[in-house]
Length: 337
Ligand code: NCD
Ligand code: ZN
Image 1 (tube, protein in one colour):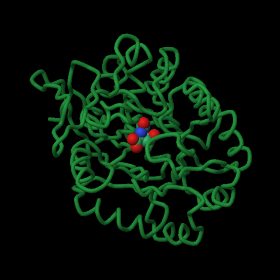
Image 2 (tube, rainbow, N blue to C red; image 1 turned 180 degrees about the vertical axis):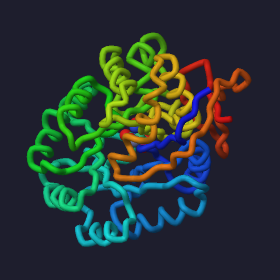
Image 3 (cartoon, rainbow, N blue to C red; image 1 turned 30 degrees about the vertical axis):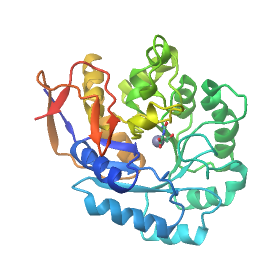
């Protein structure tokens, strides 16, 4: 049996409409806080869109603290950002490089043109969440994250020295090293990047349900992610990047990027820390480090979890006339008691 604080997920996609209602319900079961990403079909770049989205989400929320984000691009208006910040309407802004991932066609092509926004964020101590991939024609997708560190991220931190940054869903040993050597940066780690590698993803049969951005890396990189997560290092914490797509869109002529991992995320993380005898660091990875990074208090009530022999992994969840594909790694499943 394990007793931990109710976990937080500092990177999740709820989507919109009925799907958001459905996915939020699942999140309410498992997480005390969630940081919700703004890459909707019309990205959330202003207060009107944010307020509309908030209204929809908060109507269905049952008990989780929902932290909202703004999609940062050159459409954003500084006055509007200031107003939203004053009213405490959002917790962070998110930067997507142009065409790096799902719904990023209004992302940023040249980060050097974003200086006025970075200045504003730095001045007001607002965290900048970054999808850290350098996307360029004919480049190797496995190299994107490292290239982003060398090009964009290095430039940002040398020009905005006190800007608080979350490098999202890191996948490489290079990012682990980079984050450790910069005290204003923290990083989220997903379940699938912790537990899978290129061998399990495409070493025998290709598994479309594991296709995501950044693409899953090899075992050497995976080991470094595992080591730093298990260590409880304060600059690293959980962000599932759970990103629901319908089965017909995943198993299609062209497979979209995103892994839906919410349902078994806690179970996978508990089993991972348990089997590595590091359960003392679970609260740090799941609740404390991320809350501290975002300057938030958290619920310290302890919840009990146990390995549940009767629980069965359900790969598909029916949604309307289609399915969501649940991600799970371990045979042993943990449930709350
Ligand atoms: C995410 C999605 O589907 O919204 N996809 C993904 O592959 N991770 C977007 C993102 O976080 O990159
Ligand atoms: Zn994401």
